[in-house]
Image (tube, rainbow, N blue to C red; front, side):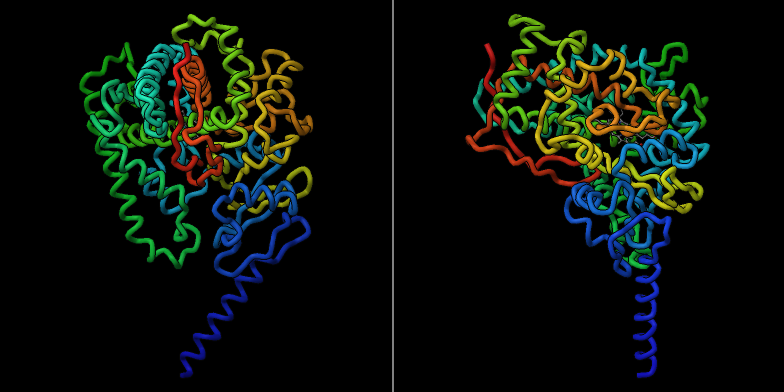
Length: 508
Ligand code: HEM
């Protein structure tokens, strides 16, 4: 009895201690909602944490504290603060926050997406060298070919009149692009996504995406870890399957390597590491599939939903395209991209309203830091950039899908602006200038900013333009039942729409 009472008081004592610890706020600390013991603020996340954080930012400001279980985090929903951290003070904020799940996925952090310190610097240097703009421009033919394959498969549905479910076709298109750049393997035109060698990757990969995207309480509340033992074990098995698949490719690459003529990213990484860092090469290749296929695939799905739900927008985009390429054009190429501001604006608007990675990837403060506005961020705090929320709270009429806002914006800018926004340059010229609302290139940041932003931004730009413009050229898209398609997003590592279909009518 005495022991039970003792345990009871001990637990109450621990809960009170945790409550006080999480809610003690100094003058310089970011503001925060009341935190619960154990959970912290996890109960406030809801099914769409990016939307919940965007609402909380309206009350608690552009930087506020969120406790993810035991992990102190700050949510950044202000472009000025994000730039201060990620661009001006990159060296203090470039490392990723590590969790048990991430450790399993990344092979103990030897990859690019989740490595830290010298390993990240080295891996990023090697990947950046392999993905220079010139090298990417060399793959344009390949992307154009994949876009043609995609249109061919869509032709079947326009002829048969069957409803078209885009998900697996768009995934095949985007996955083929990253796997061919990564290691020269594709799902052939005649194979469906469920067939052929790459299909072996799909199940484990979807499991990994789901696991990393759904959040694991064991990552944030240490004493719940034992309950997640089997889940982590399954994650480990899926990672192993993908690893084994890529290991076979790695060995084939080593056997057939011609140092003077690298075929793909894998060859380039093997050459620059002298064939001595197999684990790193395999895990970086894994990152490419994880980071590069679902993000672009879901953006294409959203684009089609907006086309189907907004016939006026579709008409304008089609008319712009035809005025540039002519009615007899067989396939749109990247050369005309600069002449299609409305379509480019529509793609950017899709990334703004349905930001694929709305909370980016979490980083961590290496040392204590005080912002220029006097807000204190202790060493070890997780940094959660709410890039979705910035693109909402710093834009007029934020929930309306308006490609025109981009057309107007670029009319008033010099032609180099867009390139500047997409560049990986560490030294932007005007980092002290306050970012104002509606300065779209500075408040719409789907690829994040600074030296650890997304290295796949240029590939994505090409990939998205070719797919969107060729779909517009070939088909009129309508809903299958006359009702608008549900635009509610499902949260995960990448947000995506609920399963949906569209009707494709071939244009003459
Ligand atoms: C619409 C498409 C895409 C979006 C919205 C997107 C977004 C992002 C974001 C927000 C980050 C986190 C950056 C940060 O921490 O500041 C990221 C990282 C990354 N992305 Fe992308 N991405 C896309 C496509 C791609 C593609 C096509 C690839 C590969 C070819 C790719 C490869 C990566 C990698 C490897 C990282 C980790 C970089 C590092 O840690 O150094 N992404 N991406």
